[in-house]
Length: 352
Image (tube, rainbow, N blue to C red; front, top):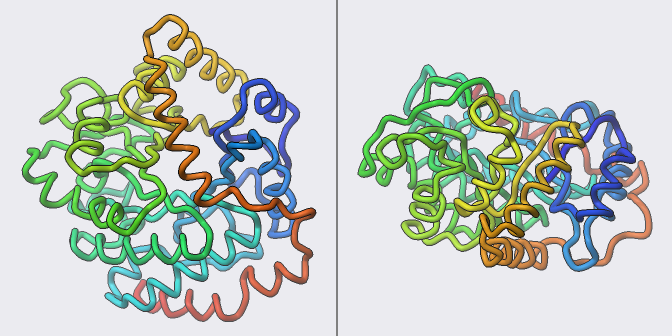
């Protein structure tokens, strides 16, 4: 999955899609002007995928400081407000409203909810993005958000496995360490992911953290014992696994992105995120994956397995008739940033 520059798909992005196909495209603030523009861009982006495997149109729209859509959209408070409220109905109303706004502008996948348990209050990388420091609350509210998003037609991706809540560094800039034993991770960090799986979440995302109790040298995204071992075997997850952005310094400062992408797929990840607008790097990453299969460094069966998971998830959420045109402005205005959603946001803000 690729990022791009500006408010419309670039010629380079379109060329990559034609030559290689793309799993999907991800929005950032640099791509966003206002709801009508986003809807038009999403309509064009959805056409970049293959006919049998349409492209995901994805975004990180958590609320609070991680919200790519702002101007004209509802400004949602951070997820921590839901945890403080303890109000299941408020969480459901938020999830339904969020799904309605995303679906209206053509987004089909939201990289949310955050399922990290904030056990380290000094953890600014996660902070108020987490629902709570209590694993049971995170698990309960996370499952409700997943169900609400997906009932609204938007695939949810829970993050960041095996857990980023106990760290003190930000993986955007360095490699955080989760220095906990497996028994503690099973009891606390894994619990919300179990709830997400039980709720039928579409996908889960790994994080670039080091867990010495299992792998002393590789970040979780690149560690087979964590992805294929803990997530697949221990938790029984058989669906899509996304990497976090492979250009984050926790990985990219230690290994070239193309090489890391091959390692991530070998470890059990199904979707590699290269989120900048560096189209040369995206091509290099695709070519590295192709070479790895050709040279039998990456088993073809592993790639086929990943594609099968894509196909299953996309059949569930994407294989419907593409509209003849983006929605009209008056239709968007009746949904995006509407009064009913503003009321939900205001109720959440009471717990800020």
